[in-house]
Length: 325
Length: 165
Image (spheres, rainbow over the protein chains, first blue to last red):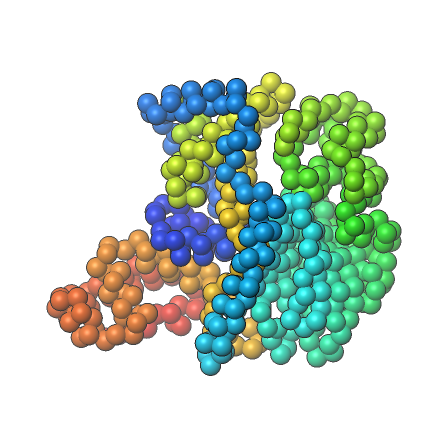
Protein backbone atom coordinates (compact mmCIF):
# COMPACT_ATOMS: atom_id res chain seq x y z
CA UNK A 1 0.00 0.00 0.00
CA UNK A 2 1.38 3.44 -0.75
CA UNK A 3 2.87 5.45 2.05
CA UNK A 4 0.20 8.12 1.88
CA UNK A 5 -2.63 5.63 2.10
CA UNK A 6 -0.85 3.97 5.00
CA UNK A 7 -0.48 7.21 6.89
CA UNK A 8 -4.12 8.15 6.47
CA UNK A 9 -5.31 4.68 7.39
CA UNK A 10 -3.12 4.36 10.47
CA UNK A 11 -4.22 7.79 11.61
CA UNK A 12 -7.89 7.02 11.15
CA UNK A 13 -7.86 3.62 12.77
CA UNK A 14 -6.55 4.66 16.13
CA UNK A 15 -6.22 7.42 18.66
CA UNK A 16 -2.98 9.33 18.68
CA UNK A 17 -1.38 11.83 21.04
CA UNK A 18 -1.80 15.53 20.37
CA UNK A 19 1.66 16.00 18.94
CA UNK A 20 1.11 13.27 16.38
CA UNK A 21 -2.29 14.66 15.50
CA UNK A 22 -0.78 18.05 14.80
CA UNK A 23 1.91 16.54 12.64
CA UNK A 24 -0.70 14.64 10.72
CA UNK A 25 -2.87 17.67 10.11
CA UNK A 26 0.11 19.74 9.01
CA UNK A 27 1.21 16.97 6.72
CA UNK A 28 -2.27 16.51 5.31
CA UNK A 29 -2.82 20.19 4.66
CA UNK A 30 0.57 20.66 2.97
CA UNK A 31 0.24 21.25 -0.77
CA UNK A 32 2.03 18.06 -1.80
CA UNK A 33 0.52 14.91 -3.32
CA UNK A 34 -2.92 16.38 -2.86
CA UNK A 35 -4.77 14.02 -5.15
CA UNK A 36 -3.27 10.96 -3.50
CA UNK A 37 -4.25 12.28 -0.10
CA UNK A 38 -7.76 12.92 -1.33
CA UNK A 39 -8.02 9.37 -2.67
CA UNK A 40 -6.82 8.00 0.64
CA UNK A 41 -9.43 10.04 2.48
CA UNK A 42 -12.20 8.82 0.23
CA UNK A 43 -11.00 5.27 0.77
CA UNK A 44 -11.42 5.70 4.51
CA UNK A 45 -14.95 6.96 3.93
CA UNK A 46 -15.79 3.91 1.87
CA UNK A 47 -14.52 1.53 4.51
CA UNK A 48 -17.12 2.66 7.00
CA UNK A 49 -20.14 0.45 7.50
CA UNK A 50 -23.02 2.52 8.62
CA UNK A 51 -25.05 1.26 11.55
CA UNK A 52 -27.70 3.40 13.15
CA UNK A 53 -28.10 3.07 16.90
CA UNK A 54 -30.43 4.62 19.49
CA UNK A 55 -28.33 7.77 19.70
CA UNK A 56 -28.93 8.44 16.01
CA UNK A 57 -32.57 9.14 16.79
CA UNK A 58 -31.49 11.74 19.37
CA UNK A 59 -29.16 13.39 16.89
CA UNK A 60 -31.97 13.41 14.38
CA UNK A 61 -34.20 15.29 16.78
CA UNK A 62 -31.47 17.76 17.48
CA UNK A 63 -30.95 18.51 13.82
CA UNK A 64 -34.67 19.10 13.33
CA UNK A 65 -34.67 21.37 16.35
CA UNK A 66 -31.88 23.44 14.89
CA UNK A 67 -33.96 24.50 11.97
CA UNK A 68 -35.84 26.80 14.24
CA UNK A 69 -32.73 28.33 15.75
CA UNK A 70 -30.28 30.78 14.28
CA UNK A 71 -27.57 28.44 13.06
CA UNK A 72 -24.86 30.99 13.48
CA UNK A 73 -25.07 30.64 17.23
CA UNK A 74 -23.69 27.14 17.06
CA UNK A 75 -20.67 27.95 14.95
CA UNK A 76 -17.48 26.29 16.11
CA UNK A 77 -15.60 28.42 13.66
CA UNK A 78 -13.32 31.20 14.65
CA UNK A 79 -14.02 34.23 12.48
CA UNK A 80 -11.21 35.60 10.32
CA UNK A 81 -10.95 38.63 12.55
CA UNK A 82 -10.25 36.50 15.57
CA UNK A 83 -7.62 34.56 13.69
CA UNK A 84 -5.92 37.78 12.74
CA UNK A 85 -5.91 39.04 16.30
CA UNK A 86 -4.65 35.71 17.55
CA UNK A 87 -1.95 35.73 14.91
CA UNK A 88 -0.75 39.18 15.88
CA UNK A 89 -0.36 37.98 19.45
CA UNK A 90 1.07 34.66 18.42
CA UNK A 91 3.70 35.89 16.04
CA UNK A 92 6.10 37.42 18.56
CA UNK A 93 5.84 34.23 20.60
CA UNK A 94 6.35 32.03 17.60
CA UNK A 95 9.21 34.01 16.14
CA UNK A 96 11.11 34.03 19.41
CA UNK A 97 10.46 30.33 19.77
CA UNK A 98 11.70 29.92 16.23
CA UNK A 99 14.86 31.86 17.00
CA UNK A 100 15.41 29.76 20.10
CA UNK A 101 14.90 26.49 18.28
CA UNK A 102 17.06 27.56 15.39
CA UNK A 103 19.96 28.54 17.59
CA UNK A 104 19.58 25.38 19.58
CA UNK A 105 19.71 23.25 16.48
CA UNK A 106 22.16 25.09 14.33
CA UNK A 107 24.95 22.67 15.21
CA UNK A 108 23.05 19.85 13.57
CA UNK A 109 22.28 21.94 10.49
CA UNK A 110 18.63 21.22 10.67
CA UNK A 111 16.04 23.06 8.65
CA UNK A 112 12.78 24.52 9.77
CA UNK A 113 9.94 25.01 7.42
CA UNK A 114 7.64 27.95 7.62
CA UNK A 115 4.08 27.68 6.52
CA UNK A 116 1.62 30.45 5.85
CA UNK A 117 -2.06 29.92 5.38
CA UNK A 118 -4.39 32.71 4.33
CA UNK A 119 -7.93 31.76 5.14
CA UNK A 120 -10.83 32.79 2.99
CA UNK A 121 -11.61 36.47 2.87
CA UNK A 122 -7.98 37.40 3.55
CA UNK A 123 -5.09 38.73 1.49
CA UNK A 124 -1.58 39.09 2.80
CA UNK A 125 1.96 39.88 1.75
CA UNK A 126 4.96 38.06 3.15
CA UNK A 127 8.68 38.70 2.86
CA UNK A 128 10.83 35.69 2.14
CA UNK A 129 14.26 35.15 3.67
CA UNK A 130 16.05 36.25 0.49
CA UNK A 131 14.21 39.54 0.15
CA UNK A 132 11.62 38.31 -2.31
CA UNK A 133 8.02 39.04 -1.50
CA UNK A 134 4.83 37.08 -1.96
CA UNK A 135 1.29 38.39 -1.98
CA UNK A 136 -1.20 35.65 -1.26
CA UNK A 137 -4.80 35.44 -2.37
CA UNK A 138 -7.71 34.00 -0.37
CA UNK A 139 -7.49 30.41 0.67
CA UNK A 140 -3.82 29.87 -0.16
CA UNK A 141 -0.99 28.03 1.54
CA UNK A 142 2.72 28.46 1.01
CA UNK A 143 5.54 26.46 2.57
CA UNK A 144 9.23 27.26 2.42
CA UNK A 145 12.38 26.62 4.47
CA UNK A 146 13.12 29.30 7.02
CA UNK A 147 16.50 29.77 5.41
CA UNK A 148 16.94 29.01 1.76
CA UNK A 149 19.80 26.66 0.99
CA UNK A 150 22.91 27.78 -0.81
CA UNK A 151 21.87 26.13 -4.03
CA UNK A 152 18.24 26.93 -4.52
CA UNK A 153 15.23 28.79 -3.26
CA UNK A 154 12.13 26.62 -3.23
CA UNK A 155 8.59 27.46 -2.28
CA UNK A 156 5.51 25.28 -2.34
CA UNK A 157 2.22 26.85 -3.26
CA UNK A 158 -1.36 25.73 -3.21
CA UNK A 159 -3.67 28.55 -4.15
CA UNK A 160 -2.78 31.84 -5.76
CA UNK A 161 0.09 34.25 -5.17
CA UNK A 162 2.10 36.91 -6.90
CA UNK A 163 5.84 36.60 -6.51
CA UNK A 164 8.37 39.43 -6.73
CA UNK A 165 11.66 37.62 -6.82
CA UNK A 166 14.90 39.24 -5.85
CA UNK A 167 17.76 38.72 -8.24
CA UNK A 168 20.22 35.99 -7.36
CA UNK A 169 22.14 34.39 -10.19
CA UNK A 170 23.50 31.60 -8.05
CA UNK A 171 20.20 30.43 -6.69
CA UNK A 172 17.24 29.74 -8.93
CA UNK A 173 13.88 30.58 -7.40
CA UNK A 174 11.41 27.75 -7.92
CA UNK A 175 7.71 27.74 -7.12
CA UNK A 176 6.31 24.25 -6.89
CA UNK A 177 2.62 23.56 -7.33
CA UNK A 178 0.57 20.46 -7.82
CA UNK A 179 0.94 20.41 -11.62
CA UNK A 180 3.91 22.55 -12.53
CA UNK A 181 7.17 24.06 -11.33
CA UNK A 182 7.98 27.66 -12.18
CA UNK A 183 11.60 28.69 -12.20
CA UNK A 184 12.70 32.33 -12.24
CA UNK A 185 15.80 34.45 -11.77
CA UNK A 186 14.73 38.00 -11.01
CA UNK A 187 11.23 38.54 -11.99
CA UNK A 188 7.59 39.20 -11.12
CA UNK A 189 4.98 36.56 -11.82
CA UNK A 190 1.58 35.35 -10.71
CA UNK A 191 0.59 31.74 -10.11
CA UNK A 192 -2.93 30.45 -9.68
CA UNK A 193 -3.06 26.81 -8.67
CA UNK A 194 -6.09 25.95 -6.58
CA UNK A 195 -6.94 22.28 -6.15
CA UNK A 196 -10.66 23.08 -6.56
CA UNK A 197 -10.21 24.97 -9.83
CA UNK A 198 -10.23 23.41 -13.24
CA UNK A 199 -7.32 25.48 -14.50
CA UNK A 200 -3.80 26.21 -13.25
CA UNK A 201 -2.42 29.49 -14.62
CA UNK A 202 1.01 31.09 -14.38
CA UNK A 203 1.39 34.65 -15.67
CA UNK A 204 4.65 36.51 -16.20
CA UNK A 205 4.62 40.21 -15.43
CA UNK A 206 8.26 41.07 -15.83
CA UNK A 207 11.54 39.20 -16.34
CA UNK A 208 11.66 35.63 -17.49
CA UNK A 209 10.42 32.31 -16.20
CA UNK A 210 10.69 28.70 -17.13
CA UNK A 211 7.78 26.36 -16.50
CA UNK A 212 8.30 22.62 -16.02
CA UNK A 213 5.15 20.54 -16.25
CA UNK A 214 4.90 17.73 -13.76
CA UNK A 215 2.78 15.35 -15.74
CA UNK A 216 4.82 15.47 -18.91
CA UNK A 217 8.33 16.30 -20.02
CA UNK A 218 7.18 19.59 -21.46
CA UNK A 219 8.66 22.86 -20.48
CA UNK A 220 7.97 26.41 -21.57
CA UNK A 221 9.65 29.77 -21.37
CA UNK A 222 7.41 32.77 -20.95
CA UNK A 223 7.88 36.32 -22.11
CA UNK A 224 6.38 39.19 -20.11
CA UNK A 225 2.59 39.40 -20.37
CA UNK A 226 2.35 35.80 -21.45
CA UNK A 227 0.61 33.19 -19.42
CA UNK A 228 0.45 29.46 -19.49
CA UNK A 229 -2.88 27.78 -18.87
CA UNK A 230 -3.23 24.15 -17.90
CA UNK A 231 -6.69 22.70 -18.26
CA UNK A 232 -6.65 20.11 -15.52
CA UNK A 233 -9.54 18.18 -16.91
CA UNK A 234 -8.07 17.60 -20.36
CA UNK A 235 -4.44 17.88 -19.36
CA UNK A 236 -3.80 20.28 -22.23
CA UNK A 237 -1.65 23.34 -21.88
CA UNK A 238 -1.53 26.44 -24.00
CA UNK A 239 0.12 29.83 -23.91
CA UNK A 240 -1.81 33.01 -24.40
CA UNK A 241 -1.39 36.68 -24.05
CA UNK A 242 -2.60 37.85 -20.67
CA UNK A 243 -4.37 41.05 -19.82
CA UNK A 244 -2.08 41.88 -16.93
CA UNK A 245 -4.44 44.34 -15.35
CA UNK A 246 -7.11 41.67 -15.25
CA UNK A 247 -4.82 38.97 -13.90
CA UNK A 248 -3.43 41.02 -11.07
CA UNK A 249 -6.65 42.73 -10.10
CA UNK A 250 -7.14 40.26 -7.27
CA UNK A 251 -4.49 42.07 -5.27
CA UNK A 252 -6.74 45.08 -5.03
CA UNK A 253 -9.72 42.93 -4.17
CA UNK A 254 -11.23 42.67 -7.63
CA UNK A 255 -12.68 39.44 -8.89
CA UNK A 256 -11.84 39.28 -12.55
CA UNK A 257 -12.36 36.47 -15.00
CA UNK A 258 -11.27 35.89 -18.54
CA UNK A 259 -13.29 33.19 -20.26
CA UNK A 260 -13.52 31.33 -16.98
CA UNK A 261 -15.63 28.29 -16.17
CA UNK A 262 -18.67 29.07 -14.09
CA UNK A 263 -17.43 26.54 -11.53
CA UNK A 264 -14.11 28.31 -11.12
CA UNK A 265 -15.95 31.58 -10.69
CA UNK A 266 -18.00 30.06 -7.91
CA UNK A 267 -14.82 28.82 -6.23
CA UNK A 268 -13.35 32.31 -6.24
CA UNK A 269 -16.51 33.80 -4.81
CA UNK A 270 -16.47 31.22 -2.04
CA UNK A 271 -12.93 32.10 -1.16
CA UNK A 272 -13.30 35.85 -1.24
CA UNK A 273 -16.55 36.09 0.70
CA UNK A 274 -16.01 32.98 2.81
CA UNK A 275 -19.35 31.47 1.86
CA UNK A 276 -20.49 28.07 0.72
CA UNK A 277 -22.06 27.57 -2.66
CA UNK A 278 -24.20 24.53 -3.34
CA UNK A 279 -24.99 23.98 -6.95
CA UNK A 280 -26.19 21.49 -9.43
CA UNK A 281 -23.84 22.42 -12.24
CA UNK A 282 -25.53 20.24 -14.81
CA UNK A 283 -27.69 22.99 -16.21
CA UNK A 284 -24.99 25.60 -16.47
CA UNK A 285 -21.91 23.50 -17.06
CA UNK A 286 -19.67 24.76 -19.81
CA UNK A 287 -20.74 28.34 -19.39
CA UNK A 288 -17.76 30.66 -19.56
CA UNK A 289 -17.73 34.27 -18.49
CA UNK A 290 -15.49 37.23 -18.97
CA UNK A 291 -16.41 39.64 -16.24
CA UNK A 292 -14.90 41.82 -13.54
CA UNK A 293 -16.33 42.66 -10.14
CA UNK A 294 -15.08 45.63 -8.12
CA UNK A 295 -13.80 45.07 -4.59
CA UNK A 296 -16.81 46.60 -2.92
CA UNK A 297 -19.51 44.80 -4.83
CA UNK A 298 -21.78 42.73 -2.61
CA UNK A 299 -22.76 39.13 -3.13
CA UNK A 300 -26.23 40.22 -4.15
CA UNK A 301 -24.88 42.48 -6.86
CA UNK A 302 -22.52 39.81 -8.11
CA UNK A 303 -25.19 37.18 -8.43
CA UNK A 304 -27.63 39.57 -10.02
CA UNK A 305 -24.99 40.26 -12.65
CA UNK A 306 -24.27 36.58 -13.25
CA UNK A 307 -27.95 35.93 -13.65
CA UNK A 308 -28.07 38.51 -16.38
CA UNK A 309 -25.22 36.81 -18.19
CA UNK A 310 -26.31 33.20 -18.03
CA UNK A 311 -29.51 31.46 -19.05
CA UNK A 312 -31.48 29.41 -16.54
CA UNK A 313 -29.42 30.60 -13.61
CA UNK A 314 -31.40 30.70 -10.39
CA UNK A 315 -30.02 31.31 -6.98
CA UNK A 316 -30.94 31.92 -3.37
CA UNK A 317 -28.68 33.62 -0.85
CA UNK A 318 -29.11 32.68 2.80
CA UNK A 319 -26.49 34.17 5.06
CA UNK A 320 -23.29 32.20 4.49
CA UNK A 321 -24.85 29.81 2.00
CA UNK A 322 -25.84 30.22 -1.58
CA UNK A 323 -27.91 27.72 -3.50
CA UNK A 324 -27.93 27.54 -7.27
CA UNK A 325 -30.52 25.59 -9.15
CA UNK B 1 -31.41 8.62 4.35
CA UNK B 2 -30.54 10.41 7.56
CA UNK B 3 -30.62 7.24 9.57
CA UNK B 4 -28.45 5.54 7.02
CA UNK B 5 -25.83 8.25 6.58
CA UNK B 6 -25.64 10.00 9.90
CA UNK B 7 -23.60 7.30 11.63
CA UNK B 8 -21.30 7.02 8.62
CA UNK B 9 -20.60 10.73 8.50
CA UNK B 10 -20.13 10.89 12.24
CA UNK B 11 -17.76 7.93 12.21
CA UNK B 12 -15.74 9.45 9.40
CA UNK B 13 -15.47 12.84 11.05
CA UNK B 14 -14.69 11.34 14.45
CA UNK B 15 -11.80 9.40 13.02
CA UNK B 16 -10.56 12.52 11.37
CA UNK B 17 -10.84 15.06 14.19
CA UNK B 18 -10.48 12.52 16.99
CA UNK B 19 -13.22 13.99 19.16
CA UNK B 20 -16.73 12.52 19.29
CA UNK B 21 -18.20 15.70 20.72
CA UNK B 22 -16.84 17.89 17.96
CA UNK B 23 -17.77 15.26 15.39
CA UNK B 24 -21.37 15.24 16.60
CA UNK B 25 -21.53 18.99 16.18
CA UNK B 26 -19.93 18.96 12.74
CA UNK B 27 -22.05 16.05 11.57
CA UNK B 28 -25.17 17.90 12.53
CA UNK B 29 -23.88 20.86 10.55
CA UNK B 30 -23.42 18.61 7.56
CA UNK B 31 -26.96 17.36 7.71
CA UNK B 32 -28.43 20.79 8.26
CA UNK B 33 -26.68 21.82 5.06
CA UNK B 34 -27.90 18.79 3.17
CA UNK B 35 -31.42 19.18 4.43
CA UNK B 36 -31.74 22.80 3.45
CA UNK B 37 -30.56 21.88 0.05
CA UNK B 38 -32.56 18.79 -0.41
CA UNK B 39 -35.43 20.08 -2.47
CA UNK B 40 -33.26 22.44 -4.46
CA UNK B 41 -30.67 19.94 -5.58
CA UNK B 42 -32.24 17.47 -7.92
CA UNK B 43 -30.58 14.87 -10.03
CA UNK B 44 -27.56 14.26 -7.87
CA UNK B 45 -26.29 11.05 -9.35
CA UNK B 46 -23.86 10.10 -6.68
CA UNK B 47 -25.52 10.80 -3.40
CA UNK B 48 -22.86 9.03 -1.44
CA UNK B 49 -20.06 11.05 -3.02
CA UNK B 50 -22.03 14.23 -2.48
CA UNK B 51 -22.51 13.60 1.20
CA UNK B 52 -18.87 12.62 1.48
CA UNK B 53 -17.79 15.90 -0.06
CA UNK B 54 -19.80 17.98 2.35
CA UNK B 55 -18.57 15.94 5.30
CA UNK B 56 -14.98 16.20 4.18
CA UNK B 57 -15.16 19.96 3.64
CA UNK B 58 -16.71 20.44 7.05
CA UNK B 59 -13.93 18.45 8.69
CA UNK B 60 -11.15 20.09 6.69
CA UNK B 61 -12.47 23.56 7.43
CA UNK B 62 -12.48 22.74 11.08
CA UNK B 63 -8.93 21.50 11.27
CA UNK B 64 -7.51 24.16 9.02
CA UNK B 65 -9.15 26.94 10.98
CA UNK B 66 -7.41 25.64 14.03
CA UNK B 67 -4.16 26.11 12.16
CA UNK B 68 -2.53 29.36 13.05
CA UNK B 69 -1.37 31.56 10.25
CA UNK B 70 2.27 30.94 10.85
CA UNK B 71 3.46 27.64 12.18
CA UNK B 72 6.77 26.00 12.67
CA UNK B 73 7.25 22.61 11.15
CA UNK B 74 9.58 20.07 12.71
CA UNK B 75 13.29 20.11 12.22
CA UNK B 76 15.17 17.29 10.74
CA UNK B 77 18.65 16.80 9.40
CA UNK B 78 19.29 18.07 5.95
CA UNK B 79 21.91 17.80 3.27
CA UNK B 80 22.38 20.88 1.14
CA UNK B 81 21.47 19.36 -2.18
CA UNK B 82 18.29 17.54 -1.24
CA UNK B 83 15.23 19.18 -2.72
CA UNK B 84 12.18 20.04 -0.69
CA UNK B 85 10.46 16.95 -2.03
CA UNK B 86 13.07 14.61 -0.68
CA UNK B 87 12.82 16.31 2.68
CA UNK B 88 9.07 15.97 2.75
CA UNK B 89 9.50 12.37 1.77
CA UNK B 90 11.70 11.79 4.78
CA UNK B 91 9.28 13.63 7.00
CA UNK B 92 6.41 11.52 5.71
CA UNK B 93 8.33 8.41 6.56
CA UNK B 94 8.95 9.78 10.00
CA UNK B 95 5.24 10.41 10.46
CA UNK B 96 4.42 6.91 9.30
CA UNK B 97 6.84 5.37 11.75
CA UNK B 98 5.41 7.53 14.50
CA UNK B 99 1.88 6.34 13.77
CA UNK B 100 3.01 2.73 13.79
CA UNK B 101 4.85 3.16 17.07
CA UNK B 102 1.85 4.84 18.72
CA UNK B 103 -0.22 1.77 18.03
CA UNK B 104 2.14 -0.67 19.68
CA UNK B 105 1.32 -2.17 23.07
CA UNK B 106 2.52 0.12 25.81
CA UNK B 107 5.62 -1.67 27.04
CA UNK B 108 6.91 -2.33 23.57
CA UNK B 109 6.39 1.29 22.70
CA UNK B 110 8.35 2.38 25.76
CA UNK B 111 11.20 0.02 24.91
CA UNK B 112 11.33 1.22 21.33
CA UNK B 113 11.35 4.88 22.27
CA UNK B 114 14.03 4.39 24.90
CA UNK B 115 16.18 2.58 22.44
CA UNK B 116 15.76 4.72 19.38
CA UNK B 117 14.93 8.13 20.72
CA UNK B 118 16.79 8.26 23.99
CA UNK B 119 19.62 6.08 22.78
CA UNK B 120 19.75 3.79 25.81
CA UNK B 121 21.43 0.41 25.60
CA UNK B 122 19.40 -2.74 26.03
CA UNK B 123 20.89 -3.18 29.48
CA UNK B 124 19.89 0.28 30.56
CA UNK B 125 16.37 -0.19 29.29
CA UNK B 126 16.04 -3.50 31.11
CA UNK B 127 17.15 -1.87 34.34
CA UNK B 128 14.89 1.11 33.82
CA UNK B 129 11.74 -0.88 33.22
CA UNK B 130 12.59 -3.72 35.57
CA UNK B 131 12.42 -6.41 32.95
CA UNK B 132 14.94 -8.88 31.59
CA UNK B 133 17.33 -8.01 28.82
CA UNK B 134 15.84 -10.83 26.77
CA UNK B 135 12.42 -9.25 27.03
CA UNK B 136 13.86 -5.96 25.82
CA UNK B 137 15.44 -7.69 22.86
CA UNK B 138 12.19 -9.45 22.03
CA UNK B 139 10.27 -6.20 22.16
CA UNK B 140 12.75 -4.49 19.87
CA UNK B 141 12.68 -7.35 17.42
CA UNK B 142 8.92 -7.33 17.25
CA UNK B 143 8.79 -3.55 16.96
CA UNK B 144 11.30 -3.43 14.14
CA UNK B 145 9.65 -6.34 12.40
CA UNK B 146 6.34 -4.51 12.48
CA UNK B 147 7.80 -1.29 11.19
CA UNK B 148 9.72 -3.07 8.49
CA UNK B 149 6.63 -4.95 7.43
CA UNK B 150 4.68 -1.79 6.86
CA UNK B 151 7.43 0.19 5.25
CA UNK B 152 8.91 -2.75 3.37
CA UNK B 153 9.72 -1.29 -0.03
CA UNK B 154 11.47 1.93 0.77
CA UNK B 155 15.15 2.25 0.18
CA UNK B 156 15.55 4.72 3.02
CA UNK B 157 14.80 1.75 5.23
CA UNK B 158 18.47 1.26 5.85
CA UNK B 159 18.73 4.73 7.33
CA UNK B 160 16.00 4.09 9.86
CA UNK B 161 16.52 0.47 10.67
CA UNK B 162 19.54 -0.41 12.61
CA UNK B 163 19.20 -3.94 13.79
CA UNK B 164 21.22 -4.86 16.80
CA UNK B 165 22.39 -8.39 17.05
